[in-house]
Amino acid sequence: MSDLLNAHGVSLHRPSEHMDYSLAIALTLLGLFGAFMSYSATKVALVDAGYNPHYYIERQGVFVLIGIVVMLVLARLDYRRLEVLATPLYVFSFFALAGVFVVGKSALGAQRWYSFGPLQIQPSEFTVLFIILAVATFCERRNQGLRMYDVTRLLVMAMAPLALIFLQPDLGTSIIIVLVVAGMMVVAGIPPRFMAFLTIVGSIGLVAAVYLDLLKKYQVERFTSFINQNSNNSAISALLYEVHNAKAAIGAGGLWGAGVFNGLQTVLGFVPEQRTDFIFTAIGEQLGFVGAASVILLLGFIGWRMWVTGRRAKDTMGRLLCIGIFIFFAFSCFENIGMTMGIMPVTGIPLPLLSYGGSAALVFYSAGGVVLSVSRRLGN
Image (cartoon, rainbow, N blue to C red; front, side, top):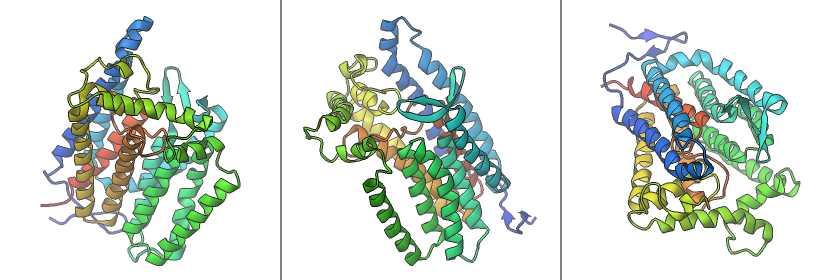
C-alpha cells in the first residue's frame, strides 16, 4: 500500500515499530532525576525556614509528568502534520514576547515572564522550539536549495523574535537562537559564501554593539569575567562570586560526593540559584565525580540519539527538526555545565530537564517528542 501524501505531494511516512525507546527512557529518567535533585538542593533550607520541604519537588514533578505525556503524544503524531502549525505558533510566540513588556513580570533586572498566580511562563523558551519548526518548514518547501532571497527571509524570520528576546534582556536565549538558525541553515545547504558573509557581518555587528553600548555594561562584564577570573575589579569580582562558590561545591564532592541532602555549599546555600541555573553544583557536591560524570554521560547519550535520528531522517523537515533540537539541547548542556566550572560565561541558560522550571521542562519534553516522532518514521 502506498504512503499517504501531504499537501505538497511529499510522502507521509507511516510509523514503524522502531521508535527510539532508549531516548524516551533517557529523557524520562533525566526529568525525574532533575526533580529529585531540586528537592535535595532545597529541602534543608525550606525546613530551616519553616516551609514545606516538598514544595519544589511537588511543583517540578507535576511539570515533568505533564511533559512526559506531551512527549509521548507528540511521538505518536506525524511530525509533518506540525507543518500547518508552524506559522500560527511563530506568530503567537512573537506576540507573546511583545506582551511581556506590557503585562509581564520583572525579576533580577529582566522582564521575561508571565505570572499566573503561582505559575510563571517564560515565552522565550518556547520561542526557540517554534523557530526551529518554522525554519524546518520553510526549508522543506524549498527543495531546490536556499537562494540569497531565501536566506534573507530566514534571517528576518529569526531576527524579529530575537530582537524582542534581546531587549528583555535574555542574552543566553538570544545566543541559542543564533546558533540554532545558523546550524540549520548550514544543514539545509546554504552556500558557503553566504555563510561566510553572514559570519563576518555578525562579528562586525557584535563588536559594534559593544562599542555603541547596545549591550548593557553588566552583560559585557558577564561575558568577559570568566576569562579574567583573578581580576581585582570590584564589579567583575561580584559576578565571579557565584562561579567561585560553584567550583568550590563541585570540587568538595570529591570522587563519591558528600551524599544526598549533605554538602556545606548546598545545605548552607552558598551557591545562588542552585535549584535552577546552578543545579549541576548540587549534583557535583552531593554525588561527586562519579555522579556528575554519569549525568554528563546521560546528557551525551540523549544528544547523540538526537543527532543520529537527524542524520537518518528521510526528508529535509525531519532532518532539520532534529538538528535544530540537537543544537538547542547540546549547547544548553555545554553552556550551563561550563559556567558552573568557570569555562563559560554565566548566562542563565537552564540545564535541560535538570534545572527547576516548568517552562523549560515542557519545552525540552516537547522537543524530545518531535525527535521521537521522526525516529518512528525512519523505516526499517
